[in-house]
Length: 272
Ligand SMILES: Nc1ncnc2c1ncn2[C@@H]1O[C@H](COP(=O)(O)OP(=O)(O)O)[C@@H](O)[C@H]1O
Ligand SMILES: [Mg+2]
Image 1 (cartoon, rainbow, N blue to C red):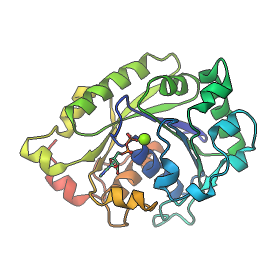
Image 2: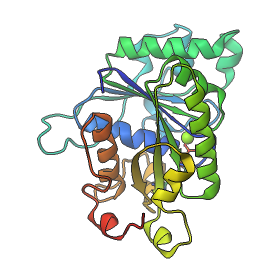
Image 3: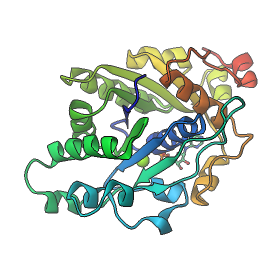
Image 4: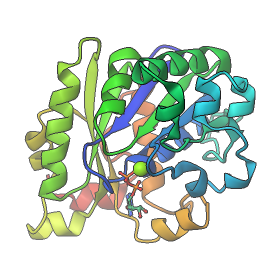
């Protein structure tokens, strides 16, 4: 993908792992040496600053930048990225623009959704980012506005439940209807291999079928992840979500990567 690639993470359903997946993929892209900007556009449920342990560093939020009350530099705080893999000399910077609260809609006046797209475009340029990752909430207007005015690619996140798959299908359909949206991909998150194998939960192919979009990757379940996020920490280095996010980051870079590359156990046992 070209420099300055803009990626939207979305789903009309909450709790499926949009913020988790967006922050993991951003940490992996930065680990691979790319300057990566992560923007929290979930104005109802700001979470990325907490998950990455940088809340105390946040002074300005997205609305300050949108309303030109601060520079791009001031709106971005450095957050931890994955360690660079072998062959990559140095990790790139990972920078977070924290979400404001809903008051932005009161202070922003008419045309707020267009203004969000304009502010993102400005932020992408001024930050010199190789990748801009936008995390959104479970509403539809902000993701659609970002898709129409800003994003090159939309990643629709779904976990294994049938309600999440249905919501992902609906999200992907609506995003595909957008005028300027070029590609939509499915990201399967919180995937429980054993449950799929036993037949109680949807398998990967079933989920892809249910959404009717190509799959960018599968992030497995890590039962220790929520506690790490609560402590503002990246996943443990032995967590299966780490190679999974790295694989997705590589695919975003245009590097062909097998679905379970580096995730041997999942590969052996996954029931497609
Ligand atoms: N791959 C995963 N393994 C285990 N828990 C996960 C995984 N992805 C997300 N979670 C948990 O699910 C919950 C919702 O995730 P979150 O990223 O906040 O969802 P969303 O942004 O879609 O509302 C969080 O408690 C998070 O820790
Ligand atoms: Mg979220």
